[in-house]
Length: 113
Length: 115
Image 1 (cartoon, each protein chain N blue to C red):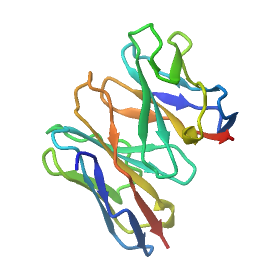
Image 2 (image 1 turned 45 degrees about the vertical axis):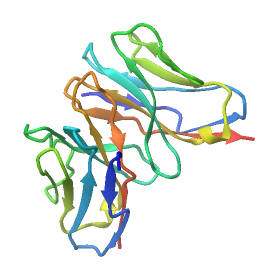
Image 3 (image 1 turned 60 degrees about the horizontal axis):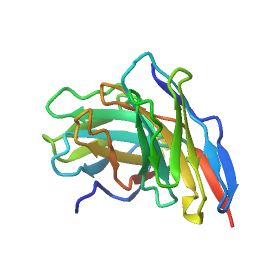
Image 4 (image 1 turned 90 degrees about the horizontal axis):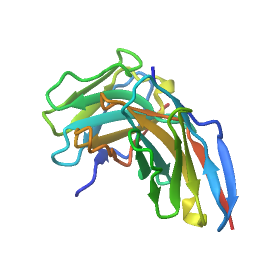
């Protein structure tokens, strides 16, 4: 069975600094997708970044980038130049070939002004 | 309305009553997912619909939970004889269903409180 583990329930970062959120997953598949979602207090889940497992290059979206280590089954999210609006719950998610998604338990990010 | 919508946004019910939660996916999206999110927890997969295929019900926690979907349109999640442990936010998401179009679009959720 696929599982997604986020070992950091809470993280904090100073505004304008960089923070890295950790995620590991377990799978026997070779083709899959990985995602980071952001959930602010409004509850609306927002896709932050995605990574295709067959791509070796790490995905980047503006201030957000990932460190994808396929062999280690690790998928961390780096937020650079943190902003107050980045404060939210962040969920790591795995999508298998059958279209089912598996989510981690989340990391609550606090941005300190 | 291009996004996923859910109704009601909040629902308070007495223990033992039945509730129905509704999800309107993005038009044309063949895949629809229901998740449960307990307070301070991650998303727990409940059920997945893909086109006309049999739904994947492997995440439904008990036979009190059921869901239906009319074609590639509206879905209803029904919880019978609600219990206090059913209190949670229920999130719906849809996607195009194409494996290479991977993104899920989430609705705002329904917060269910069982008293």
